Image (cartoon, rainbow, N blue to C red; front, side, top):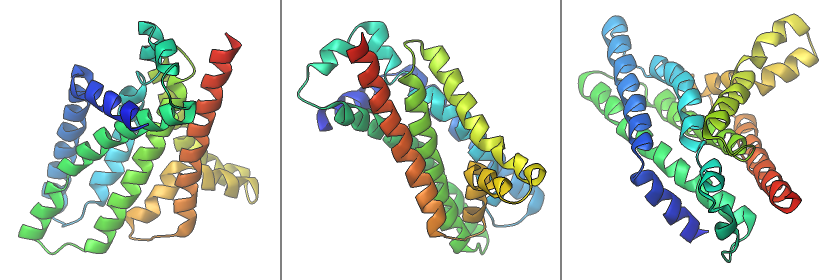
Length: 234
């Protein structure tokens, strides 16, 4: 798995697309941070993370769309499967490489709380919890993106599918008020947006950790099962 991780991370480092996506992520983040700070004059990152949650929803599937689709396009999938590693190890190695790239992009944003600390008196609790929530949110996005990549050999189709799945998880919470108690509570719980809101408020709840952890494990498990089905089915 470590060899797969290093191979995939090296591939990202030599990929122009990865640099473009990180640049877009950082550029939009800088824009939101500057505009919100200048308009509100409040030492807070809630608005920044609320906007970047939507940006990451599009960036993550584009970052992961090549993880398996590219292997099939280049005809290296069969060669990869002959390596002494399980399918779960392949998926884990590739996923962790994408996660590292995502964390590097987030790491650049650490300049923002430093700026707030120099020129204001921010409440560090919500900022720390927001970073934790944003990492979990992005990790979930990447797991969904990997699953989309495991469905097709087309990178474009994988990216679009990943964005579509994430949009469903984004808007499902909107149905809660229309469906009423019971079913409405379920759709409200399934919303990645509603789960993330508490992190922005500085609220750390074990149910949120279970929610994101369950989605990550579920979509990575589905990726493993889907790849095994496609390979052995062929």
